[in-house]
Amino acid sequence: MLETEIDESDALLQRLMLDAVAREGQLGGSPSQGEIPFIHIIPTPGFCLKTKNESQEKIFINICMSDDVPEPKDITENELIKLLETDDAFQYRVPMGIGEPHAEMDKGGKGCTAYDVIINSKFYQKIHQSDVFYRFFLQLMLEGIESKYEQNLCREFVILKNRKSVGKLQEQRIRTQSKPVIMEMDEMSQSKAPSSLPSKSPLIQEMPPDEPKSRGKEPEYRIIQDPPEGHPEFLVAEINLPQVKTASTFSLDVGEDRILLQTRSNAYYLDVFLPYFLMQEECGAQFNRKTKILTITMPVQPCS
Image (cartoon, rainbow, N blue to C red):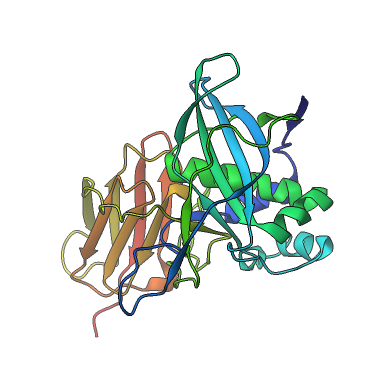
């Protein structure tokens, strides 16, 4: 077996991981009159990757292909590298279908978990012709599974030589057109001060499961004003998210007088209207991984 490890010190891939976020609910959905049509696809096996999660359980990822998955924009290696070196990296999207986990048996008869990831057939060929695109895709794919299912996957993995897939590949369904995306905040370093919320589209367009999920429960939160009396200069929101591991697993939208937060695991959903108008471009947010608290700093427009 060929053992492969992703070098997380690679500067380009580190930049990628700051910008890439997996988004549910963009290409899939239930059909009804007036909605975008969808199709069912049965993936074609490509290759299988074996790794482990933080509990040391075996994880198999079946990398599959289908002509029905939208093809990413055809760019060269140099164009991809230039995008990753600039603020335009988020413009390159990779549509992929990340299926539900299914229980399987490994060759030793022990239980394991398998995921099916489907990409466009032409893009599949491209990642096998280019080491840059290959490593680029693997980083996105692993991050996508982690974000969707709140997993921590080991970056040391094995590509199976004699098996193209583990278990029965699951049928998935995708929309034939994409829906508009929701803007999402970047994960920020705890050592940096909050900055303006960016309006970036995600790199990965992920196809959701068949049935819509619930929005999730409302998290505990508090909003305080500074100064405490009179018209505030700032509002500060502190939102407790104990089930969230990283900022890449939720989206945050701060509007003119509204906070909207959603997690991809549907653990939490918060929609709050504020009694003041905000200076949106100066708002900032920071997620503390240790305390699991999201802090949003919101300058308030002065009284007219």
